[in-house]
Length: 228
Image (cartoon, rainbow, N blue to C red; front, side):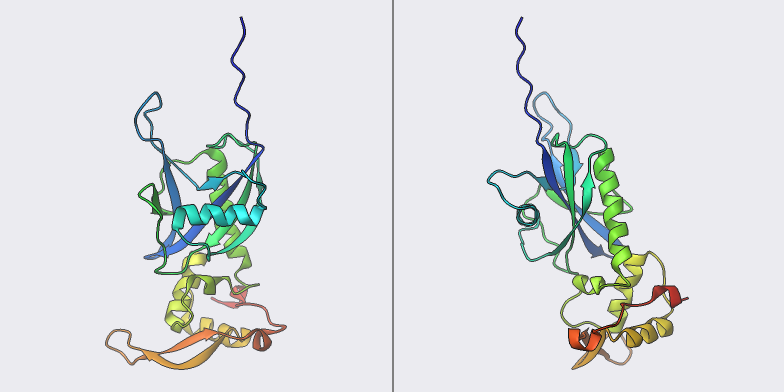
C-alpha cells in the first residue's frame, strides 16, 4: 500500500520578537493561529514568523514579518541567534531569531489576529518560542550598557523621568534617581533641548534628545554596575 508523501519541512523560519513598553513592563506581540473550526479546533498564540518564498535575505524576511504583524517596517531590529530545539509552530527545522523594539505609543497591529501581551500574562508558547522570547529579553538587557538601546523605545524628545522609566522597565528593577542622572552625564548620552513639558502639578520638565555620535564617541552607555 502506497503512503501519502510527507509534507516537506521548511528548512528555516525567521521569527521576530517585537517588544514595547506597556504600563510598567514589557509587552510582546503574538499572532493568533487557528480559528476553532475544522479538525483542529484549537486556537494558539505564536511569535510572528515567516519563511522565504522568493529568495529574500534574513533582514528582509524580518521586516516582512513586522509589516505583516504591526503594519510598519521602520521598527529597529537586530539578529539574536538561531534555535532548533523543540517543535516550531510552522514545522521549521531551524529558527533565525530577531528582536524588535517598538517605540512607546506606536504599538499597533495590522489585524485582529495580532495582540500585545504583557510578559507577566502570556498564553502558552511552544518550547522553542518560549526560549526565544526569554533570550530576546536577555539580549536587550545585555546591550543596555554598551549601546543606546533604551532610546529605541522613546520618541525623539523625552524627559529624564521617561528615560529612567524605560531603563527600569528593561532592567526589571528600580534605579536611584540621582545616581542614574550622574551616570547619564558621565556617558554623555543625552543633551537638553529648548522644549519643556508639564508633568503633573510640579514644575515643567525639560525635554532631552539622544546625544550626537560625536559627543558620545569613546564612551560606554550607562554603567549600571555603578548604580545602587
